[in-house]
Image (spheres, rainbow, N blue to C red):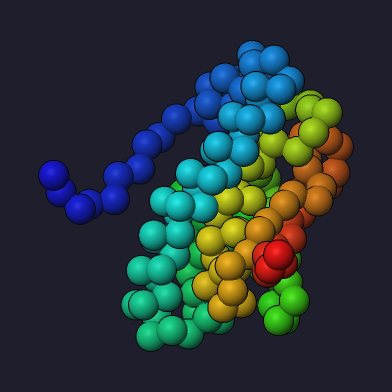
Length: 151
């Protein structure tokens, strides 16, 4: 099997409609699994991008912003990272647009990808969450990633 990275073109409403049809508890579980998968598999791409940038973390963030737009994941803008967190603002999230009006955040794959990118940019295992979602009426989707607390 080839090591090539394959992408799938799919209408956002087709994908996100699947989540709308799930009962609330199963929807939350499925979105969490979607985020985890994006963190794992998107993280593979992010690590390659960082390696190709010779470890330059600013170049990694710039590449992720460009790639997200090219893949149709909306317009991403990272705030300047600090040791405590990395924040992301996304205009035109296809996940929010594809889902429609929601009572909870729905951009799980973006949160998953941010988790992977933040772990590389901050040099620590991170967790990420969506703090505002267009599907809930916000102007843009906003995310925050912070290093995981050790027990």
